[in-house]
Image (tube, rainbow, N blue to C red):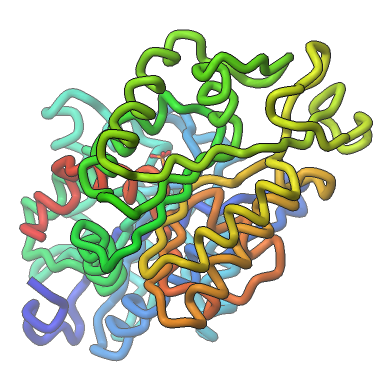
Length: 407
Ligand code: 3PG
């Protein structure tokens, strides 16, 4: 069901599960949201419900608190930012299903919005026990009363079998939100891409991406390319017999990675690994960064970015593609000496977009990276709000939040 299929929503309470899991820095009394992309991406659905005169009850998680209130993970700063972006008040409840939540929900007029405190302050939200999760889902549903409805719009959390994602939509009339629909539509296009198709993978661990690499190698064909950067590139280099010094290395994945290289070769897929890297003496901006060839990494140094020659080669390969999927930074982009690779890849995607390619930035860190590096969102075909969710979708897994919505 879509929003419109929920019928007349005027005066009805609608629980919206959004993904408002944004990075927050600073002291608890002066929190600063460093990237509000997920809040902005959640606005259209909330605004649509406001426009329909619904009484909008937004629920979300922040970070990974351990099933009990933890001031470090309060959604209060998110409520303030949401109100600013909506240009309307947001009633924030300091609990999720308690007296405050009930009061906030009871106080809503038609077209007004409340945000309840972090779902994960309640053990039932993430419980593996169906009954415990179900009881928490019942408590959320009870807030809605007669005529209540649910909208699943938190794409970044659809891969979680959590009460607000999976159990609530099975208890009340439920619809899939516009953000989830848009994300799924783009990711679906990546399963039968226009070619050449370039996949750019970064991030620290290859073990986090095994399923997705497997699946992508199924989709990639002769003439397509798989570009590998980030911390995981060193496991690839090592698997080819190169020394990687003190760089991140997953010894137990060397055989797997060799298998990927063999499969890529068999299929005529170009596996592009860096030919140079930026190395340093420690994980710090001032640790004497230097560019070295990928086959000459000193034993006492660790790699923190792909080098300039590789950055150029990666950007060129990306510019030549008709479809590009990018997940994971190429280096420690938060520190300027190691931002060059990520910047070059982002620029490659921006250029490819300009020449008509479908470019998709796959969530989490890469989305934050393109914004932190000053790129305009319109430079990309789609910036996914889901890191883990987009990868699991591309792995071909059943995602609980989509299953529950029949999406
Ligand atoms: C994310 O940040 O990818 C989503 O908000 C999901 O968060 P989680 O990995 O803590 O479930």
